[in-house]
Image 1 (spheres, rainbow, N blue to C red):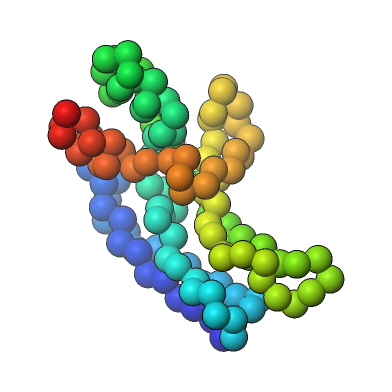
Image 2: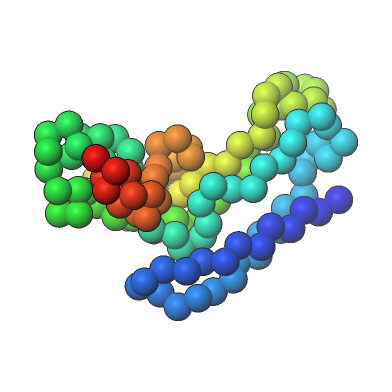
Length: 126
């Protein structure tokens, strides 16, 4: 059983494109729901920790925070060792490049990232 997720990416800096993600769950008949990723390939994001530092020090996040692009997505299916059962809910990890001046891929959970648009909306609320 394959699951398809179609995402539409619209950004001021890039033209409209559609990304199609296909994945085959290792545990398709399991009770856990497979959720769509919160971010899409090539989407611009910020690190929540950097944004929080800017907010707590009244700094302009647009000047102080690095903006990164999602370069990779990975579906993590935590399984029990030697078992064909999930140990926890499946979740997505997102790979970005360029953190701390490196070009290697660094992985983050959805809780560690925030989209550039949401960051702007969050700042506008305050």
